[in-house]
Amino acid sequence: MKEQLYDIKRRATEELSKISTIQDLDAVRIRFLGKKGELTSVLRGMGALSPEERPVIGQLANEIRTFIEERIDEVKKELGEKELERKLRSEYIDVTMPGRRRYLGKKHPLTLVLDEIKEVFIGMGFEIAEGPEIELDYYNFEALNTPKNHPARDVQDTFYITDEILLRTQTSPVQVRVMENRRPPIRIICPGRVYRSDAVDATHSPIFHQVEGLVVDKGVTMGDLIGTLKVFARSLFGEKTEIRLRPHHFPFTEPSAEVDVSCWACGGSGCRVCKGEGWIEILGAGMVHPRVLEMCSIDPEVYSGFAFGLGVERTAMGRFNIDDMRLLYENDIRFLSQF
Image (cartoon, rainbow, N blue to C red; front, side, top):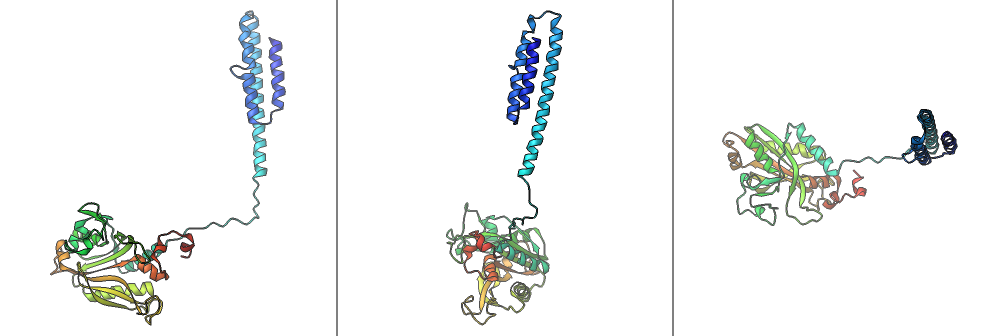
């Protein structure tokens, strides 16, 4: 049995000297030291030895096992060092080579314009207010003095979820919610997504963005509205920009007006962008209807206010001379990389 043990030691030493991979090392370990390995098989025959021989053979077997285990650890360490050296050679980095250019993302043109609009109005003392995009009919229409038979409430123009719940068609409901919960003075803008049942074309989309503004205080006049809109237009389109108001009708303002700015391309002389008119419509505005103030428990005999709303897409198209709204939603990197 001693001869068998010494033979196992000799053969294990020879095998370990030839090892070149971790897989081969595991195979040798299992063959000599595993549960069904050669050393275990020899030890199973110790039952036939005399009581005097068993301690001697047991001690020798343990010494040989320890020797093989230590040799396996040494070989494993050597293989690890060789593998690390190989990786360092193969993964050598030439620090003199030029690096790969990383393309950084940029803000979307709608975000750029929205940030500019926010900055202008925050500079004038406005706060930003937000509200839900899934809105109640009451806030979207009724509280804004829009009668039941108004065309804007038709299912052909509005996305209804139920008879009383819909996707908001404007950000004006945010104004109502603010007036219900705060007392004047109020000076807010309400940016956000809105939804209308429009066919997609170069100037229409069922999803678009609006920024609506509201000021309510004692003594607010139409002159305050005009002054605010002039500051906004000149901040966004240039110091020489002029505005004009044309009479219009909105249920929630009285009087109401559509607001044009002098063409940013020709300065008002007439060109392709403004279709020869010299003016471009950008928003609607007016004095808050007394009925709207009353429904929000604000006394119209004491307080007055003005409101306005503008489309971010149309403003972005004018700001960057874009002629098709669909470009803003197609996520074409060739288009977006220009901004």
